[in-house]
Amino acid sequence: MRAANNAIRFYDGALSRMSRRELLNIAWKLGAAAVLQPLAPVTAFAQPVFRAYPFSLGVASGDPWPDSVVLWTRLAPEPFAGGGMPMANVEVQWEVAGDRTFRSVVRSGTAVARPELGHSVHVEAGGLSPHREYWYRFRCGGEVSQVGRTRTAPAAGAAVDRLRFGVCGCGHYETGFFTAYGHVADEAFDFIFHTGDYIYEGRGDAGRNPSNVRTHLGQEIYTLVDYRNRYAQYKSDPNLMAAHHSAPMIVTWDDHEVDNDYAGDRDERDTPSEVFLLRRAAAYQAYFETMPLRASAMPNGPHLDLYRRLRFGNLLDLNVLDTRQYRSKQACAASTALCQNAALDPARTILGAAQEQWLFKNLAETAATWTVLGQQVPTFARDNAGTNPEARFSMDKWDGYAGGRQRLYQRLAEARTPNPIVLSGDVHTHWCADLKMDFANPKSATVGVEFTNTSATSGGDGSDVQANWERLHADNPHLTYHSNKRGYIACTATPKTMQADFRVIDRVTVAGAPAHTAATRVVQAGQPGSLPS
Ligand code: FE
Ligand code: CA
Image (cartoon, rainbow, N blue to C red; front, side, top):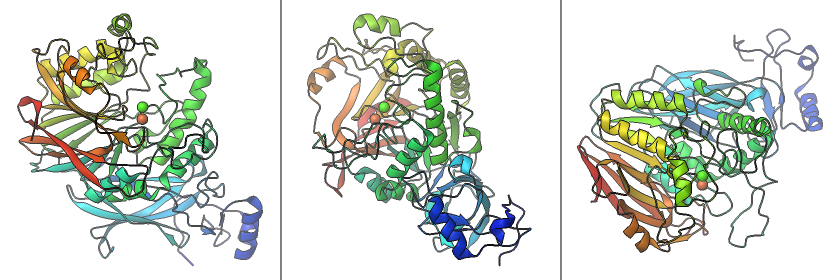
């Protein structure tokens, strides 16, 4: 019998007198895949007996600091049916080791998986050494989880020779295999940045689109349990799981974690705000439950504080942004030049006042070589005047919030923010862009460089070059690279350079295709602008 423990207890006098077999019978009748087995009448506490593996969603780590990292798992013996856990607190043991065989366990403890949070666990494992590799795992009810690799951040201000990180996002489950995430796993990055669209909310395609390779379970998702089941379907993918097991992931979201193109408290269908916010609350809760986030991101109704700053010694400062929760509604659905005038209205915002103030303060205080803004929708302008005059600008991107973009770029220039690099996703195609103070004037100052990642799968196999690329490039000379293939970006930061390897996959509709570097762009510290290597 295990020793009593002062963590949260579960006690039920009737349950405690039952045998393990009786308890399992109850579990079957209740439809739960696990049942509590109290160990003694007074000190009884949750000790589940599982009839299916509870770590079906793998493990994850995230938000590395110099002395701590978040360790995540979620107990889900029936992952696609709400989880299959009994409605009680369950204790989960965790271990962090300096080696992958766990001969040298350096930290361990017990966490409580609660029904309110879908039996997810978010451990902020502290007391770790900076800038080093660790391995972690969980145990519950005699079951042992997979082993994850993680890595702490370098100490504050420490000299750092090199950091390698991956940028990934937009993995639509139906339109391709998660091969890109598998290749991200093979890279064993120092950290991975996810730009959002981790899930898509639509109903199962069920064979309607012949190019899709698999189908979502169920209808469009609205309730907390719907979102949990959708995340579970994605997280059960072995390639996505492998990416999490390979490195800490720093996440932000885009629209599809809730609903396509939503803006603040408004969805696309003009649902009354107070009604849409019920859905947003369910989606945000499921997001917190699924992601390796710190307690500061605990949702509060339809609100969740996601923007945050992560620092990597003297080399790199990462500001993770949220351009969905606080934004003004898109200026208009079409995107003509007239619409662009509305987008210039300085009262319209994509960050919201509080986040903008927080960011602008950080941008003046950064001492690291590289100032990275990790976010979702591209900031760079893409004027389609010559190719699609009726839809010149994409009003869902920073183009639709051009007043806010101008404030950001001006801040970068005035605060002399060191070497700004913007990471973004959302548009399902690779781009490298020099960020111009005035995109209409190629001679205007370059304030930074943006690496926009393509999708992991969204859009299907893609093609070598997007239609109209030549014309688009002629109209937008600040664009220094483009590809219409699926993949990810592998970034290498050193005190002298920031290099982006644009990694592409030939096909995502067949499993296991190789990845290759289609292009490399390099930024020299102190010299704004991107160059071929
Ligand atoms: Fe997407
Ligand atoms: Ca998106």
